[in-house]
Length: 302
Length: 80
Image 1 (cartoon, one colour):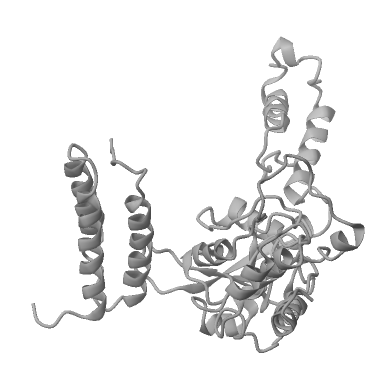
Image 2: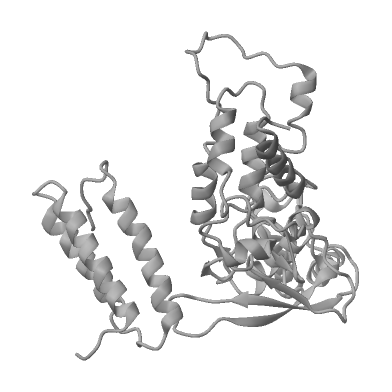
């Protein structure tokens, strides 16, 4: 009979215990503890069945033949004194989830525990796993893996951001810029304690603006933001600024327009339009920026 | 020591700023804070001068730590 050993997948399951018991049954005869007796029969057919089950787990739970694809992943460790490099990993994509995040977690799980990534929701709503996959900024959890085994997947951190480690980047500047546009409701009079009403048409103006998850894919795809990350606000932050400018419940519209009306904060935008093509939520920051420019020219929100 | 390079000047300036931030804290916490600042800098004293990328990374991390230390609410640091 085939050896029940194999690359049994990690996880809390009873299979290793059952296999060990099955092996004992083969070599030593029945030595099953009484509390397991109802689960394990100690005949050799049962042991063989357990062995084939383990082989199936070793091959992969999907039962498909292994399909190996190479991935080159940007690695840099600040504690080592080496230069950054692309490390190559072979991953069996037939026994892995369909998204890039699944591949990265599989690598971290099985091959290299030191790989550092940010991730949280695995469904494209938190924005943590934003990175550059095959030259495009996306969320790793929404990016389907290219199934062509000849293609080499290339994963890098968001471009022109300072790297903390491997694929984790320093978002502090991005968050500080978001804070600077005062992304909260500002009212002139004291609050009455009741809700602030808004017509359906006014609420419809916020569609396509409130869904932003601040993943920074758009800002880090903008060449203008690459060259002036400290002074140009970037598409994500300008989208948020516009969201508050056209919110009918907000009273500080004139101040918001004046705050953003600056040669560097707003007018570094040269309508390159990388932001709109790269947004993983399908939003259009470029359109919002154009609307801000039109609002400033008109004197009131457009 | 010869002319200091730009990065060395930045590192010294960061050290001085951290020192001044420590002096604005309550007197009983100051020695521990100053020792912490010294240790953080001494940990990485052996980075070669040519490894600019790593030095700049350390300076950025140091500036963030300094920002946190300068907050009014932070009164001291305690280590095991």
